[in-house]
Image 1: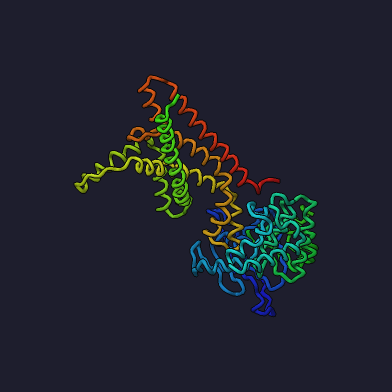
Image 2: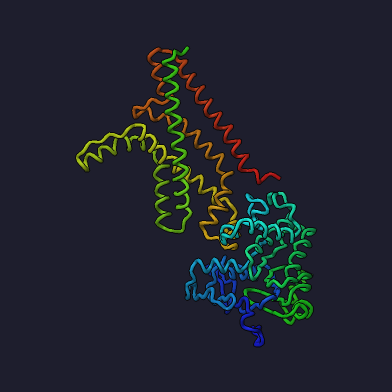
Length: 263
Length: 221
């Protein structure tokens, strides 16, 4: 991988991973991944299922621990492991603040069903950041207004459509003021007619300058919004470049055959 | 019909029955949470201890546990210290029933916690919550609705199992009516006891149905 751009200002590197590997028992899902993300960049990761896309994303905020390699967030070392052993120990407080920097949106939304929409958005700032309640609620309502669901503030998630739930999940992640947003197939569990509203919300976020890493099957969206597209296959990054390069003129045969199948 | 002495005896017997059941369900729930958390903990010692606790108290008869504490503990104490000591039967009943219901409730609570979708813990962690915060604010509150029915079940079982305390010289509802029945040769006293048991369990059933609705409010579409 030669993604390192020598002109990139060092302080603008938001995430950098060095040769990360992930094994589940004997199964090696990530086989040595290198890449970095600069501030404001929108990266779409595409690839067949089982290629390690979601695992890679989950390793970034340590929902899964890597077995080898290094992860840096804003050039601060967040994890360094070798043969499933931790080389540098990160304490829990730091891990927690790291997770606050990386907002995550899941395929199945994972909204908290026992809390109202507004409570879903405000609970993490309330108990993790312990900020002023009225400020948190104010900010929560602003976020709901931004995603166009302010009038649903007091509803429980079960009464929302899938698309609305996913938009709330985005607002919930944004409430922690993350520096980077991770999206794990955010539209895969949605009915086709609901995909658009979620992509629209994400597009607005991208236009606001948010740094985003998106695992997706929405090739059209990737083409339109991504600054860079990464094609993963079999635990490796197979190809990476601008949407024009990867989607319109793929160099690698595997990228071509994958795109032929889904387009 | 009942004279007033008999009526008061039945009321007192009912109170004994209720006291034991209520004390046992409260302490059982509190310690049950702790034992349940031990069972799902990755800490081997906590896990092993709680496994052993549940194994013992579910695997032996409640009556045996009652005898162990009422008869065996004072003898062990005597042998160890040379001093005699007598457990108050009511205290003994509180302790035994609480220890026993802790084991059952721990399993109920454990399975309720494990039935919550794994994505909930992941979402909580991704938002920066630690394990403790995620458990207290996200996972455990979602178990309430799922706990109501089995805890109601356990409470009704407890209420009826309290009749075992007649063996340690306590006058609960059943023993009270049995004494009356054998003194007078009239079986009707058993019917009175059945009516009281049914009255209490009906109240519990209605109450727990209401609770289930209340805790499940967020699942209504």
